[in-house]
Image 1 (cartoon, rainbow, N blue to C red):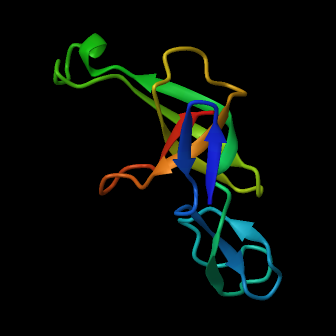
Image 2 (cartoon, rainbow, N blue to C red):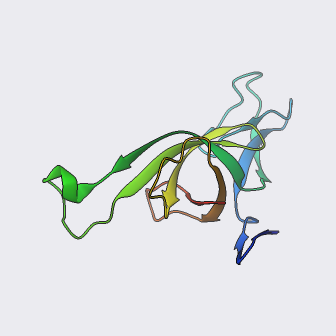
Length: 119
């Protein structure tokens, strides 16, 4: 599936969440057992759409201790339209993203959060 955002279309078919096989409760991808009924979880597709609940911006150059070549990074808690909250990296985010709508853009680099962009 793709979502049209005016001048660009972003893929959202690659984002998956976990669903309990017993009670169908949805969970973030890093959850392994249902907290409601201890049921096993399966992978199910999600829209990849959500809203920023909270965020912080990491700026290695401003801290004085990091690599001056690294760009600032916005890390957020995103409430997916399906319900679960996840950690995400928000690209191209220069302003206040709290309450902003976001869309999944791509899988993370190894050991990083999935990448979302403002929609």
